[in-house]
Length: 216
Image (tube, rainbow, N blue to C red; front, top):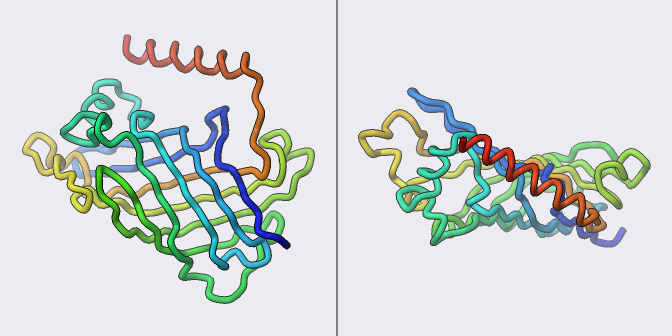
């Protein structure tokens, strides 16, 4: 089977990335539903030079607490104005070492190494993922058009490695961990989804109203 490209772009905002900080004095969960990217794999051998990129705009990260969001996005922490996005690019697969086909509906476990571009720096990171290929049918069409690839990827991000050490400030010690576990849960499709403009406008309006309620 020829190499297949899957598009990571759900206009309905159902893909997500989640970051967990479970420190001695506080637990913080940060989420974003604005994950985009592209995956290219050989369905006959998922370990054969897959190409994977994910991008998340940092101003989309949300703790659920408006004031905390402002602090997180400020120059002291993420400095979103200067570094607007975070990007992961897969470099190589380390496991499985043997040819491994993607079987319809069966998760394939993949381990590899990639590059994380974040806060003005590029650092190597290890990643572990589960990828499940689903051939297009009536059920998958309710989610996205075409064949679907469901990927759950996990990696750790060290704040000091990317020049962020605000967690060491006296008022923050014990509230944010230095190394953050990150989980990316996305559904990619072989066909770019088409959503009516009116539906996108309604969705944007609902999100704006929700944000105003949280601030108020």
